[in-house]
Image (cartoon, rainbow over all chains, first blue to last red):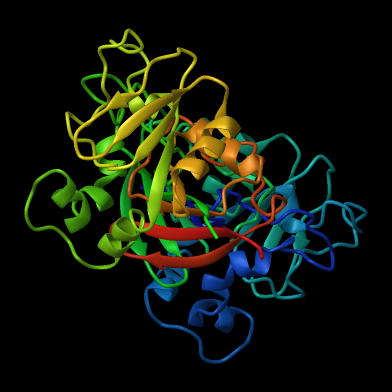
Length: 215
Length: 215
């Protein structure tokens, strides 16, 4: 059965899912690099960015499994491009250069219709203007029986949780305070929504928590 | 220099500082026992409740240091008694029996004036009706040069953080989802308030974080 998963979603010690003031120059926002530090040092992420080496323990296991059996992605608007910047004028092709690390169809939520964008390495960005549930439906159809990974940001994950359409959520509570930003669990009562804590592992860099819909 | 400290303050994975529906029968609220589980298994807490044994590792080190060099406490109303229950009618003497684990003056915030309550073992409950800052001032004076520990609950800690009067805050992110309740960092921007993360240690039971005012 194809599942809908959020993976490697970093939140701060005080609960924020993204650094504030994300920009073209600082795509992870203020404090964002430290927030994602547990992932950036893993072999999985280093390899993705063409670098050798990297950590191969628990952090890497979580990073790696986030890419296993994924047939399509859904991305919120800010995951694809900066809030203020050259997108949606048509020239923006995502944060990742010519060969994005998806290698499958990626459904990007936006208010601006745009033709599909075929990148090298198998990634095709498709732009969806009629909302999260439509994007998820299209992603499921495109995933060929594999899972759909919802990449964020905060608003998109919240929507998925509130509508009960996300089966599994892996968060990594990273080692920083952000003070402000978007709070992942704002207005989201995981217990009432039927989620339970299925797994948790603490490493020196992060507190990994897997939340899953009760069977 | 006498400091104002919050110690062993448990919050859930989703950021809540207390279980919902706290009552006389269930003083820690729904899910509260699991939230505080890391503490309840330590030697320090077991000893406090007259039990032998207990964990003596990192969790216990954090539990124990919360009681070191404390000369007085400030407690919010709900830390002393249930929201609905026999208090403030005068018969309620706290959650802890005849010998509370404080052994020093404890200033309890309330809207109801009440004479001081002298317990065995050195604890004296004093009831303060003119607010947190007054309670803290009185606690400082009574602490004889030692530190003041602010015991909670959430609203009291938030007030202390917002007014900048808390020097150090130890939170333990416990292994449970609560879904709802009081969020510790609601409306509290620790970074803007000048706090930084001074220490963090992850154990199988909790993510310990010490937040301190920058010098």
